[in-house]
Length: 273
Image (tube, rainbow, N blue to C red):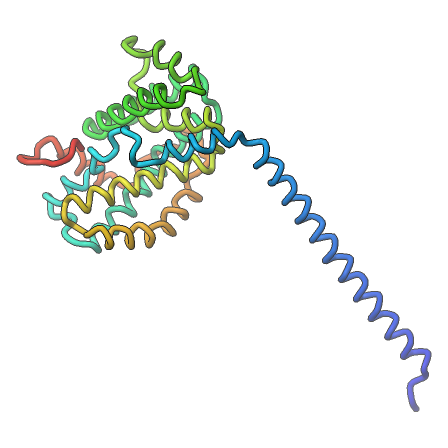
């Protein structure tokens, strides 16, 4: 027996309702996306453009903070025959970034979120007690002291940097370790915590690969290719270790820490650490 016209009309009517509901759902999702886009646009408008220039300058290799004077233990690893070619170099860089993320990102995060004098002093004392490698500790203090001096002189729109440096210098209250200083400067410059932590990992990767070129492990073009290749691994490291408290700071590559500690025993050396 053939179907009646009424049933066909009902079927078409239900299809129209389903299509209408689907269209409304798409419109709702699009509306939510537009709302989120507008929120992001408003946040971007509220950021002072002059601070963005300062944020970029903080990451510029021309800023004289002494980062290129250190190899993060790479020079000692080469002389110990742990690193002898590009493949070994990539493995070394990945382990270094993992160790940097697990040990130092918590200090960068905490200082960025609360860039005050009391919090900075507290974080500096904790990190000073955490670092057992004397070579790494001296390198951290050297770079942190340089960054604080340069930041206080360059970023004059932040007078608190100079006042905090003047209060602490020579007092012995702080050692000026690099990670807390960097996080504090990022916080005062209006950088969000995620960007500051990625920036710290980026600078570590940039500096160690730069050291590799001067140690003739890789050429300039090869260094650029390696940096781009490792960037995907670096992002996974950041996601793994970001937004953690200092109580979670730990070492994940103790061998690298031990090798860096042997740097002072090298007969001839190009880098400070």
